[in-house]
Image (cartoon, rainbow over all chains, first blue to last red; front, side, top):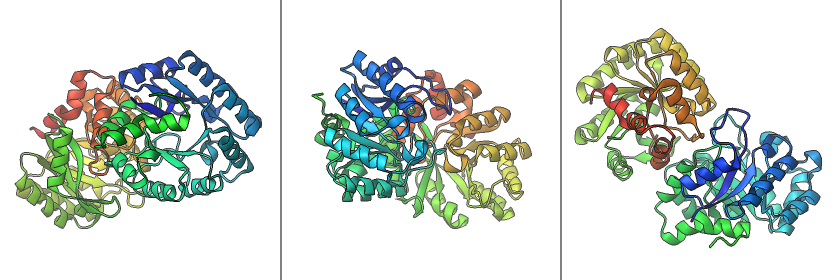
Amino acid sequence: MRIDINAFFGHWPYHPLPHTSGEDLLRLMDRFGIDRAAVASLRGLHGDWRTANAETLALARVHPDRFTPIACMSPMNDGGAGPLRELAAEGFRGVRLYPLLIQGYSLRSPFTHEIAAAAGELNMMVIVPTRPMMNFRFPTLPIPEIDTLARQHPTTRFLLSGPNYLSEFRAATETMADCPNLSIEFACMQGYGAVRHLVEAVGEQRVLFGTGTVLHYPACNVAKLDHAGLPPAQHQAVAWQNAARLLGIDAG
Amino acid sequence: MVIDGHVHIGTSQFLQIDTDAERLIAIADAAGFARIFVTHLTALYYEMREGNDCLGLDLARHADRLLGYVTIPTHRLGQAACDEIRRCVERYGMKGVKMYSHPESPITEAASTGILETAADLRLPVLGHFTPAECDVLMQRVPEAIVLMAHMGGQPYALGNWHLAVEVAARHPNLYLDTASSQIDNGMIEYAVEQLGPQRVVFGTDTPLLDPWVQRTKIEGAEISDEAKGLILGGNLQRLLGL
């Protein structure tokens, strides 16, 4: 069993993607043995997040056994706690924030704190990517910014997405040591033995399988997990159990 | 036969690597790589002769598994670098040249020309940590040089631009793309094969910085023919090196 905590469908403004639709994503999941995905529309990064979330919800309702909807939201178009409550009522299990990277607001902004507090009340996961995908064209979000946010909202569950190797790995694991409410997914983490080192550093309960599909090749992160050399119990925790717990779904 | 065309040995604080030949061969065994093409970190980040001599000793002990790059830390060594290439080929049988380019000491400075000409004269492929734009300049200067563009644009100095890497390679028949990179952008291998043909794409992992299984899966999971995968994973380097 594998649950991909970091999957998308849609288009990318920087280059054409070979797979774009929800059905394309499903075919990739089938090909590479991914049972379920927490999915969001890529429209939510650059375009209207309300339309993006409607697309995501529509896809998840067609394949409720395969997709768990993840929302995108920003301060534009009246983003805030009210709309987040509506999304939670519709079945969204998490919300993605792209502050400085794409959407131009700060992790210290009132909007961010409003979302973080509301997500905690609603038992929704807050996903904070340090980069939108593992491509060196993008600047990265400083990980200490996430440390501050996670400390100020200790009952909210945060997911760190996007760190790669070397100093980014160190910053991520050091931040996680201070923030027990912060987990991490490894779609962008390409260092040798990364998954094993992550589990050693922060424990298997806080490491989640993610691929970044359709932006990334899904197979690469399947291979990363399967060759991590984890004992079966740790492998299962990382492959799907942690995601099921954070998403609040019964996937067993 | 799978050949990993991009492997590091030795110690680097910058890359947080400290590894020897035995460990690299163990990784290669686990990942299913028959041969690994290795560059020494002491030569890359400190002093070339010391590092290349260390690698030479490893090559002698593991001739059936290791292939060696003569590593040149900076093109600004000029004639000394050319001499080092000839020395390492004659003494250790090294099969290629590894070079680096930094924004503050770009490989497009004139001193690199003689080094590329030496490599071309000896028919040695040059694994160059160069941007696509730098490769475009170099290949116009020394078109007979065989250059493997390390990371096919998927490195910070090149801003991850594999589209430009492919575009530049299309202009220069002796320019090849090395697939080792943190980037696993969906479609990047298919695009390179479609535009250049599989003969111009060479498998590498950047082990032990990067995960070799991720890098191998980037090729094996791509939507290209089995024949193309075979060329990328080893056939092209076999041809280039005359193995």
